[in-house]
Amino acid sequence: MDGLTNLRALLDDAQYQLEQVVSGMTESQLDHRLVSTAMTPRETLVHVTECYVAGCASAEGREHEWGSYQAASSDLPSLLEAYRTERAKAVEELVVADEGRIRVANWLIGHDYYHVGQLAATRLATDPEWDTFSIYRG
Image (cartoon, rainbow, N blue to C red; front, side, top):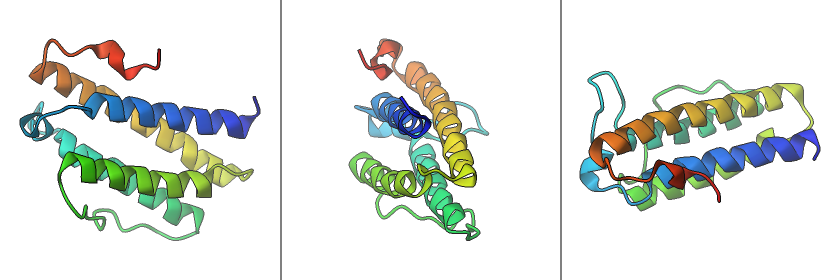
C-alpha cells in the first residue's frame, strides 16, 4: 500500500468510527454536555465539519475564518450529510502528493480520532449498555 492509499484508508477509518459512535444517538444524547467546557455531540459534528471546510481552504492557500461555518440543519441525518460532503471535498483536495496538503490530512485524521474518543465517552455516559466495540470494522 502506498502512502496516499494509506492516508485515504486512515481518513475513511476515522470517518467510520465517528459515524458509528453517533449512530442511533437520541436528541437528548446529541445535546448532552459531558462537562461544562466540552462540546455536545451535535456541536462536535458541526465543529469537525468546519475543520474539513478549513482543510479545503488551507489546500487552496486561503485562511479560514473559524466559527464562520454554520450547519444548514441540526438534525443528525443533516449533520452527517454535511460532514460527509465537506469531508469528501477535503479528501480530494488533500490526498495528493503534496507535503503541505498531506500534513493537513494527517492533522484531520488525528483530530477526528480525538473527537471519536470524546463522543464515545459521552455515549457511554448516556448509554452504559452501548457497545464500545461497535466503532471498529469487524
